[in-house]
Amino acid sequence: MESKNYSENGLEIMITIVNREKADSYLDLLQSFEVNMQMSVPAYGAARPEMLSKLDLIDAEKTVIFSVIRQDQVKYAFRKLREKFTSVKNGNGISFTVPMSSVIGVSVFGFLSNNTMTVREDK
Picture 1 (cartoon, rainbow, N blue to C red):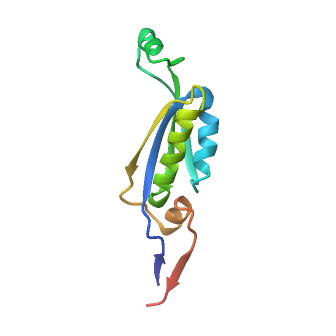
Picture 2: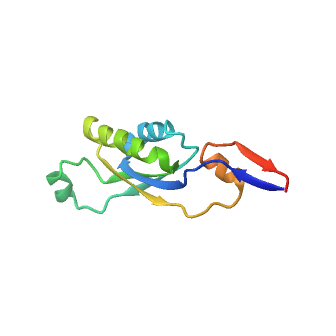
């Protein structure tokens, strides 16, 4: 038997760095783009306090969010993130993606891509 997954979209890891107190709202926002797997990690920025005040940033406490997202959702997620970065008080952040070259297992790919439609065909 051969398994085929009919998703034409690859996956990417979206890395988003935001102020720690805003992390939950960004996790919720990213989940709305069919993101089934996210991980958040507390982090600290490297800028000195005088640089933070020049850039009008409140503190160095950050959260790094790792999200697995389908390629077809990336541009929409970036658009919403950009809106939120500019419209929310202290909502500054940065986000970028890294393409995933492979995933082991059709079921894992189906879960991560939010596409569980797997077809089995007999040879």
